[in-house]
Length: 295
Image 1 (cartoon, rainbow, N blue to C red):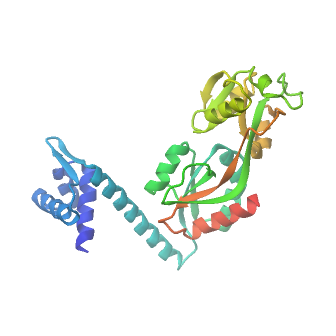
Image 2 (cartoon, rainbow, N blue to C red):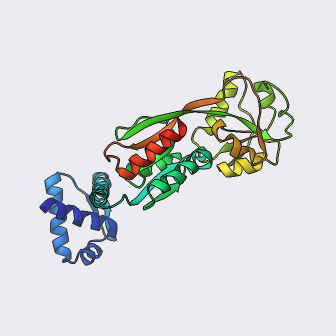
């Protein structure tokens, strides 16, 4: 209990940025805050704050503790919600970070079925970009990521593969290459390309395909969002690469697959979650529906 109080004082000071503001929020005197922080630093054997004329700033050690305290608070909140769920239907919020193809084609029917089974759970789905999603997952701001699993392993992330995702080349309907069969890499290289700004592998994957065919990377003229790539490619002769699993939705933007030689990009897709946060009832329900949907 004593340590919990000290951690609470620490967390409020980190958020407030000054000892006086933290004291006001907590409802104690500033000297009491100072003594408590000093006591916590003595217990841990590290300095948690740099004291400056304008306030206090977390040290690297303080940043680590602040992140862990935030996760502890989130886990406590989740525990209270799960305990409440024992006496009533599952409720709360499920926070999902999703890749573009998941948002476009894979998740909509899953969300629809999930809502039928868990009407009291609100789903929050965001697509902030891969690197941001990973950080939000580690920070406890997301419950899961639905997307490609071809990222470096992390001690606190569990990957659950569900399907193979294969990227191929798309161009507008009526594109000069659209009616040809097995277009070679040199022909693809003759056209301008679009890469996805929020996809860490988009540009490098395109370059790797052409390098494997002893060619220089193509002329990338646009870097944009997934929606931007679909829109621009649908009205120009620019080429881009998208997952085949979103074919019907992609075609709605006036695009068609370009038949080409070789495999452009293939990788595992699925769910990523935090190892230190056991899945709750809503998570488990969503995962079961998703697995059934992609099976």
